[in-house]
Length: 264
Image (cartoon, rainbow, N blue to C red; front, side, top):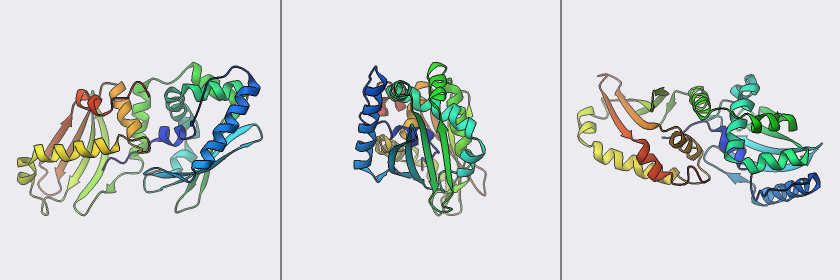
């Protein structure tokens, strides 16, 4: 159920085996090792995309991905590249500062190529070396990154989750971030749903635990919620009755699940 467009993960898979270095030649050598290591792991799959390879080309590190267009709207990347660079890049280099230092030292740029799984549309995002320096020196605030992540995710909603459930939107109200669902309450009685909230929360907790993995596109989003002290809500609204049921994970509960939200 927790499908959210997460540019951060698309970027950070590039950051394998990064170590800090001082000289340009050492940095370039290290980046070549990273590209070789990444290619040895490819195709590298997450729950929303596949990294198919990387190379050094014209003084740029180039990484290529196939993207599940049911999760990511490539028009968002194509039409708002500056926003992608501003917020996605800031999320990337906050999560992987060593990668930023390595690229800056090397003098290289970074190009990320996204190919639609259905349309075969190709959208490149190019960070020049100066872009990386600027982002590293003046990263966006986590609150702004969170707002952008929510806006980006809503670009691919609504989505049918199962036969009776539709994820309609992701919203934020103060310290609460909510996944809003429309539930066919002719197929699922809302009273029964309400009487089994503890069981439903336990099932969702198990799902969050399962999503706490390096290859989950949702994990970076949960880490962002932890860092910004947000609660996570699941709000189910009956399609016919309009009745709502809410399941809440406090920020403290999220922190217990994402124990590495600061250290990673």
